[in-house]
Image (tube, rainbow, N blue to C red; front, side, top):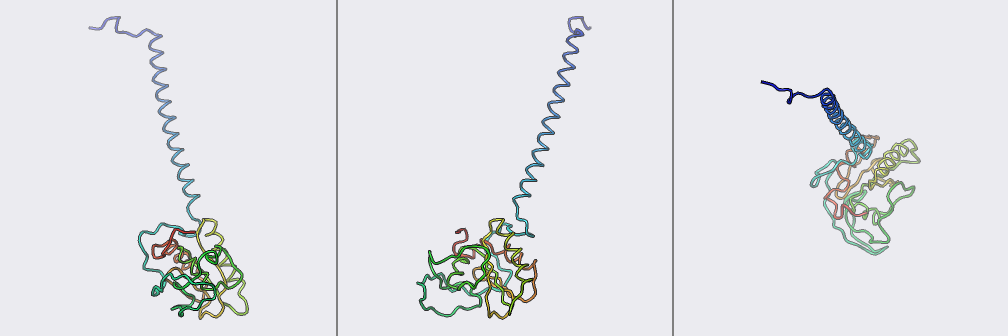
Length: 209
């Protein structure tokens, strides 16, 4: 049996309805805020992820490829001009090289040949070297390779581009103990090599600069 004591007054009823509306509005605002935050986070992650194909994807362990595996010739430091045994590939992928401050060379695009003894220190640090050989010149090839290097450098990746006269094939990709050489420009092939070997644990010092 109900009594008038249990009934809400008109003022109380209006206040209760107002409270319910405020609660629903608060929940709605929270939901919208969370959704906006998630979208913003995804956009930020999309911006900071590499922009060149799949460049920069994290690698767990040491990759077995792509490219040809070359026997490791060690990390011996030598003085400038000091003689040493021959490298087991051209371009070289490991072996005798100069210590700091002679090497490593600066990352990015170089217009002149980089001696193996300098370039190998860059590979030791988990970097990637791209070289080209063309006579007398190959401006379109250099332009295509430069675009990849510039975009990779914008992502903070450790990559080199330089001429290397006399190699058997026009393009050579090298990482520590890995090489891939070919004649026709292949963007996907280059990106896959960089993505697999950049900061690879195959390199003795993969996270050094």
